[in-house]
Length: 267
Figure (cartoon, one colour):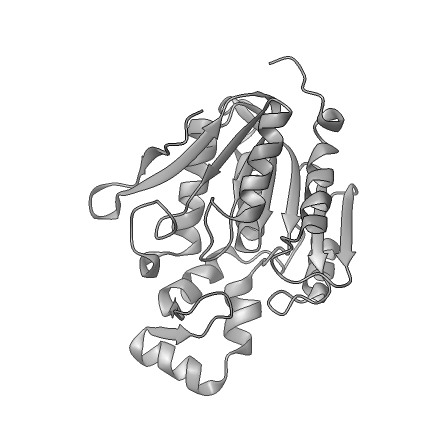
């Protein structure tokens, strides 16, 4: 692996975009990182996972969605469908063998959608498979459950008339531009209305003090997961990002559970 990102071309013609990917070669199970809304692969958790993978000779794949980080495209063109297409493309092009998929916030929703796609295609499709899911404050169905249903009437009206709303953010000096297209497209991918079959074990880390994804949202997700091997860990003083040293330690512990305690298997 080098420090420079590789670029994967996804989409065609006017919809084409360059997706920045960093891949670390190593033994299986490898790790695949799916970041959050307006986050990128240079964040604390993503880099910590990559460093752990390097220390334990594991494969690791990180990437930026279009409109994020080093990838091309405009953020306001982004939708769950678009970012899912990119996630599937990166999984197919860069992952080999069983993978522990780690999804943070929106990445948790996309990880579940990707797991559904992997299960739908069956084991004979491609060289990569899914070993486990590790989800951090998973924002499943956030465009509907955590945005649209909570928006006041004036915000809904602005989205319906102007197509975009500038949402103030505690994580950035610049507001996040929320588009009507993002909300409408999200309705095509809602998961909490029925059982969710992942076909693999699931570990969830959730902060009780999370102002963006309430801990009860994670409890509802657990109730929808069809697998028996699901563990939800609530961090009483944990916020949304769960990026403190003690949070990173919990994350690494959850990942290592599926990597033979950190001892690599033969490639």
